[in-house]
Length: 232
Ligand SMILES: Nc1nc2c(ncn2[C@@H]2O[C@H](COP(=O)(O)OP(=O)(O)OP(=O)(O)O)[C@@H](O)[C@H]2O)c(=O)[nH]1
Image (cartoon, rainbow, N blue to C red; front, side, top):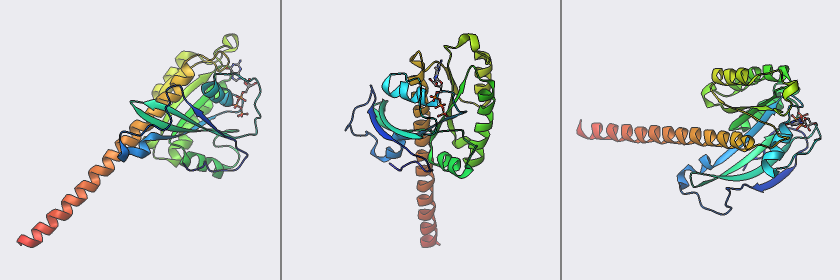
């Protein structure tokens, strides 16, 4: 697997998911690429990106993370009998901020994007639409696989973004929406990561089919040209 681009210190860790089964062969050898998912976790500072990743991978919650570190993690899950190798990039800071080159690198590298906001931070919610525009500017809009995740639902009294608002925005951006709490560690977090993985897999398989269709059309056209020459 390629390493994610960009600067900053990174730690690499390997995790095998509950559904993971190391060493199992992919049934569809030709769709090998469809079994890799490079996931970028992005959102405003402090929304809980690291907490969500760590909760998903280790089922633990750690109160403080170094905000300056960027980390990648490897993880395996099984989707429809295929082992998916996930590489998760937990970004530091916010996409579109600081060094744009670095962020562009992250976006080009990523297959799927988990865009996170916190229910107690309206600005982090408003950033989601900007993040989506940033992704669309770099990738073709139909090539962006993303899932929206609202975090810190345990802070119900501090909540300033309603579930309804989250769902409506997700509808507008045509993506799945999940809300949960890295602190409480509900199953929703795993669902969000795994739905994103499924979405990446679906898109890659579709792209693979289109590529195969267009190359078989090219072969047919070349064959027809040869036949026309022979019989003319
Ligand atoms: N109450 C509550 N606090 C949370 C939750 N998730 C994260 N936090 C806290 O929010 C703060 C920021 O969490 P991080 O995981 O470091 O956030 P981040 O988005 O990775 O931050 P940066 O790396 O600075 O961009 C920490 O103090 C966490 O303990 C949650 O679900 N509930």
